[in-house]
Length: 233
Image (tube, rainbow, N blue to C red; front, side):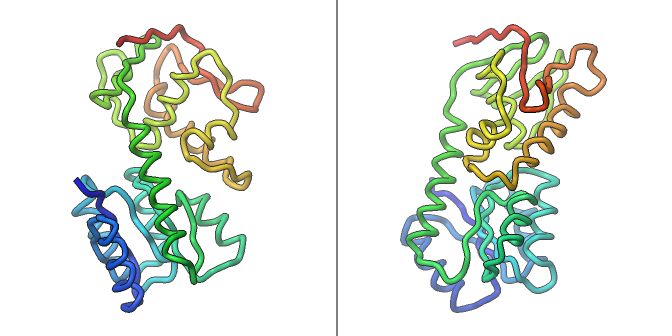
């Protein structure tokens, strides 16, 4: 089944060009021409979207506001696409949840390569076939299900990947840079605080009101799940 990309752009000629190129690469392409339409399309198709290419400067809602809204719900991969070349704008886009950033004008081969990297990373993160159990927390990668005791824990894709990474490296301190590389697939000092934000989200869901919190901060440099881990084939 082809991956589905939501292309959000208000320039007609660029929409036509990118849609043609993406469909030639066997992607299914949905179109939104303003920020409000992008938000509506996301709400309708969110369970079937694999990636969003999101322009920054849009009518009705700008790209940053669209991304902020989406990040309240899940971790759909987003590539920001903009004519802005100021480093502060790139940092703002990445800090607010963009997975990647491309500046206009660009060669289509570069955009396609960035898409392939993100899709490969997403596919790789869903191909693990073990279960992990630490204390009363269980993560089943086949069912993509997390339980704390008898309670089902609803996680976004990014929160799930972050927890899975900590469980795979149980008893090993994972620095913020290491978590960025493994979960976000980037190495950018300016967005290290994203790790802290998502650790907080994760703690609120799996450790809130628990007598035995699982995620520890170690010497202010990283995070650790220290409890004994059992892997079940």
